[in-house]
Image 1 (cartoon, one colour):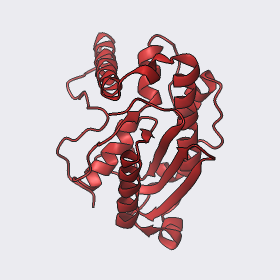
Image 2 (spheres, rainbow, N blue to C red):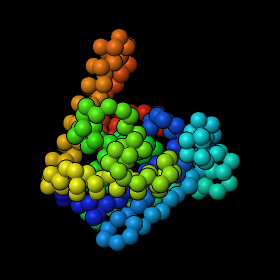
Image 3 (cartoon, rainbow, N blue to C red):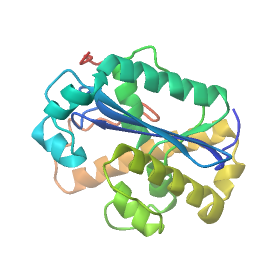
Image 4 (cartoon, rainbow, N blue to C red):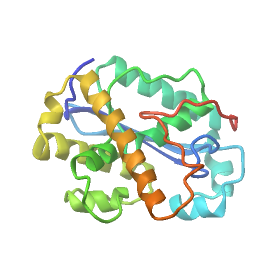
Length: 232
């Protein structure tokens, strides 16, 4: 596996019908290829085939009616998204996604044949690992503000994908250049272990606060491939 090259990225983001990656369906899929020139961005609108809850529509601005009128069939968008990600990996690009475990788990749930076959860089996981004790939220907007990275329109899929790519560039080029020197397998393992440790620390914190953590499940990174009932 190659090392992370911040000049060769494939940034990716989904907006969906909900917050559970094992249950939700795709509404928009942003695919941004960065490979030696200006970013080449495409955004796919899907008709998820189910009602888009009002809470989700308030976040990304896409209603059921709009998706039905203008969106492509859900499974076409799903298949094209996976095909483009696989092509990027074949071309040696790094997949960049903020909170990658969410988006990639959505793909895996909807298409069980999907596997991670290339390098993934997750700015959220890196930020938590390298600046563990910084207070405040770690939404994409908060983290972009912390690193002085532009986010044009939060919760718009292409804007979020571009912001994730800018964060990845900033982290690897300016803040922690050792990340770009890591072997790809080492970088993947580092993120997977960091994700596990972050979740374990959160569970322990909640336990000490007197919260019931009996249902707290530590999930896997870069995707949680546990058995789940697909919403297809």
